[in-house]
Image (cartoon, rainbow, N blue to C red; front, top):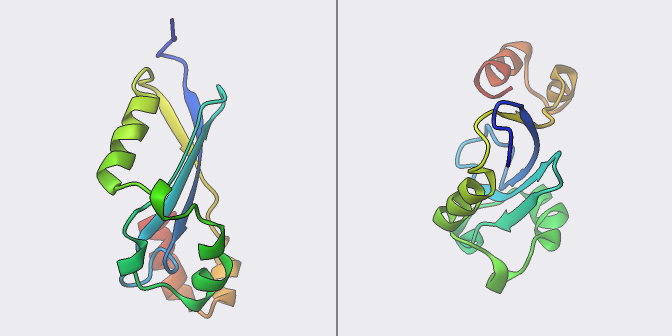
Length: 120
């Protein structure tokens, strides 16, 4: 029996077609790992129709699982709901770039604050 009142930490990793806050950026893959040892990883099946940055094409795409094993976003949502259905107190953890890293990407301070307000 799972104690639903105890928080379950879930560590999240995603890959996007561009920086997540850029126009037309799309989710490519998602990975979840719970502190209980459960894990899930999937790649979106519609990669062929997604515009990707040169960085993603060269440094991310070669490492994603191949076509026959990819899933629709609907199936991925269903899989994640199934994985987490026994828990009601979930805490998600993900890494987000530091503000100075974003400044190094060429964003100005106002843009960095806007990105943090929307996404961090």
